[in-house]
Image 1 (tube, rainbow, N blue to C red):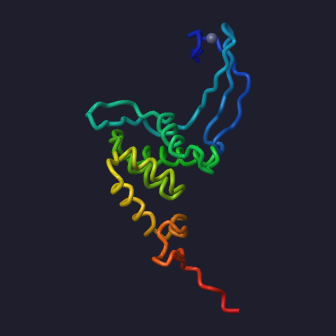
Image 2: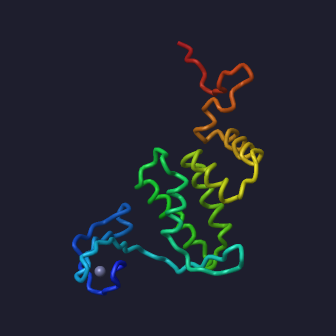
Image 3: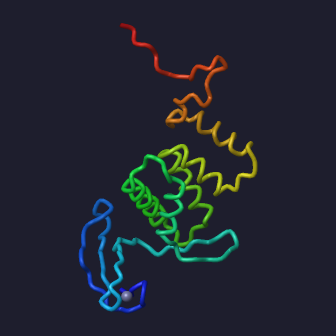
Length: 177
Ligand SMILES: [Zn+2]
């Protein structure tokens, strides 16, 4: 493995351990020439995927890029890194097993939006606003309304869309005893 710092191919594995719930192996490496330390991951790849961008340009699917954009959407949200890794692994599996070797960036984006919607409402709105290129407040309102109408989503239990009298709408009935 070529050293990312000096380009030398003399690196040594210092430590190797399972990661991402045993779906990957994480190796800590040290460069014998410059002493630089870096980490590599070994993962199962079911198939090579090509992403077709909006411009029509084709690039090799990049798991790290997907992982980064999801991490940005989840910044400062109470989601553990392992949970994010599991999400990314799940998305990649979905993409790899779709039967297609070419996939559009739009399809990936919608898949991420759907997954974030289940995971974290704030990250969902963040990602959707960037991805769908929101232009004004009405775009946000539309997506928030969509969220609030989704009974599976934690946001729908919050008071963001409270009744006119200010009380949150709730489906919890008082106990009868
Ligand atoms: Zn080096």
